[in-house]
Length: 433
Image 1 (cartoon, rainbow, N blue to C red):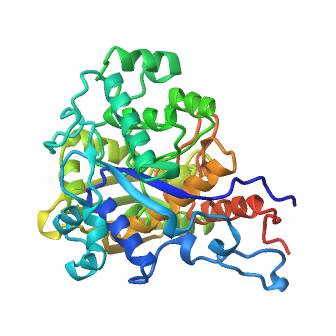
Image 2 (cartoon, rainbow, N blue to C red):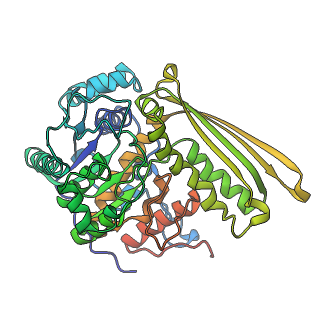
Image 3 (tube, rainbow, N blue to C red):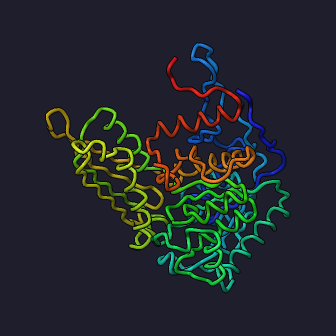
């Protein structure tokens, strides 16, 4: 196969994170800085650790992805972003209590130098937070202009060749898709008329990023870039977009366990999932409006994988319940508990129980690193619009109205690697040999 025309990853790559002072962002940034100083290992990162098979199995070619795919080098990354609280990233990381002080101190100077731009804030969209470091723009359009100015300022001051914008902030309250979201002209009209009921803060960041030609990654389940107006704008600006909602703990397990049941043609009666979480994300999700946004994202997984319309006897009557409970003593150490009622031969019942004591930000940080590097690669390849090959990283993979999303983790992983093979001019692999 012919290798794609890929722009060289020369110069610095700016990573601008919305919610840069949050637990996920500060863990991602501190960890990446530590890794590039040789002070830690990038465990969980596919771009840094995974290999990729090239050619036939008997050729025994298994290079690391980063050695054959032209990704940006970690030494070229510059970090910045926005937050509704003013602390520098060292203070923010200490407050998050994910990484130990001894680990943060190894990159303390670099973290202290990262100070957030003021954030776009609307109390109606995150009821449990009270921002103190916020933009003053009177309309949504004014706020977009301020974010665009921040992107240009950062790019100039840090001498960046390219910028990727990533959302790692809180889950906004649920809003349904409305007429204002269905076309770029009506969306821009709503921005200028300050229609705050349909234009969320996250949409301001996404629009600003696309306007500046920057790939945008949606890491929460908010309605944001998954609307026709944004697809139209991304196509117009020739910019990649991807999302939504980082797939870390419980949903990652669902995308493994549900395909297991389906491939063995085992039936499912019910799936009860509950989480306890004590960080800022847990506090925000304690609000019913924000929880509904998350619930819609988490509930879609099983139905899409199991295809009840094709297998009504096995999956036509599944009771699926998801709960998230705010429990401050746990902080960032999340616990996901699942009870799965299944049935097998002749309808005889069985149970599967899973208790995943995980660390939310420790699982999310390497996803953030992979996504910014892959989004930058996509832009340099000339890709634009929804990057379905990055579905592997998301709970609720973005798709247009004509496409059924793929949730099976292993199919997603095959698609990711086959896209990388295509980019570097290698044959895709179907495991038929």
